[in-house]
Image (cartoon, rainbow, N blue to C red; front, top):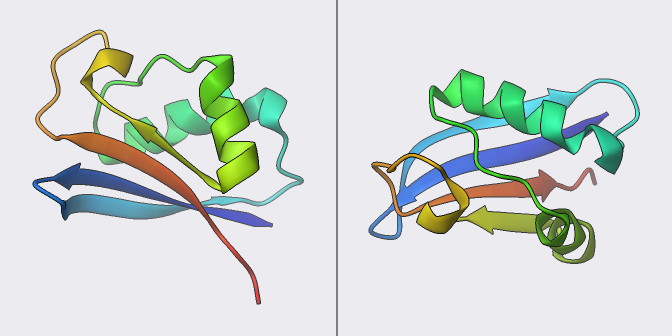
Length: 87
């Protein structure tokens, strides 16, 4: 099981957030599907996912999407996905 903390940030404050749980084995090849599900739950448009986003998530355990990653204008400053580590 993998948990992803999704946050919408505005002026360095969390506007909205959810914890998305991947019940089966997490795979980066399914990242687009996870992203669609997360965005649907947050009621926002899905950003464009490129290889650099996936590499950043794999290397640093988080990825940040900003206005340039969205086709539409957004009402927040950034959209952050972060892995929640199990202890």
